Image 1 (cartoon, helix red, strand yellow):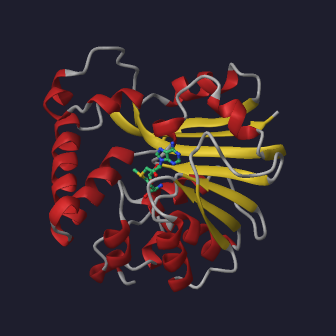
Image 2: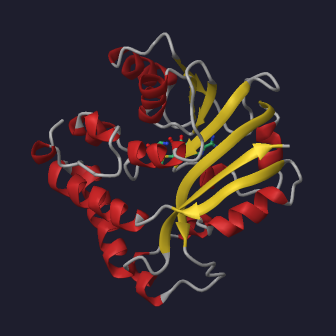
Image 3: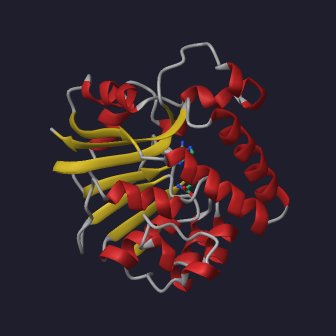
Length: 253
Ligand SMILES: C[S@@+](CC[C@H](N)C(=O)[O-])C[C@H]1O[C@@H](n2cnc3c(N)ncnc32)[C@H](O)[C@@H]1O
């Protein structure tokens, strides 16, 4: 879609620019999933035919993106969204031969060991992956030297039990699962199950997050608009001092 008619145009996310912004607004569950997965594949390249587990895929936009853009075979796996709803979205996008919707809890995954070439997870891993033992469980589903990559809301520095003053009016208790890229790298590497290849903050990630919230606030109504207005206020107050997107990619040992 051309620049001046696309409220979600972003010069960095050239593949995402081709997707209908209305489709993104209607199916959003958090910050722009296509931007986040496009940032992830910069460090975790996806090739045609790769078997990819998209864990916590929500409405499966990222799974559809990986199938359309790279020809990956994707298992679109989520807990809160029923697989029947994702099945319809996947078929409407014309990628039903590549994307399989799966309804599963992240600790009880219905897959064989060594099955996947890659696991990706966008704005979801912090809900289920902060236990020390989780990554070890998860990488059992990867083939040897398979890769796991996540993008999650994160912190520029660990804050311990003290919420920064500028964030206090906006803080929700479950933000305690936000962590720095270095925290995630240590959290994973100490298991000995993976070698971390990349652990960084997406450059200007908080600005992208704010841009998406502002566009969402202008183009949606109801709970989507309310959520975006609230989140935008927090990001404006923070100005990138504390909040970021942590991006972590590792290879199975
Ligand atoms: C904020 S939404 C993000 C969805 C999608 N990845 C996106 O970016 O639009 C978080 C997702 O994590 C999934 N999730 C949370 N806890 C989970 C669990 N224990 N097992 C599987 N999925 C889980 C939810 O079902 C939800 O769809």
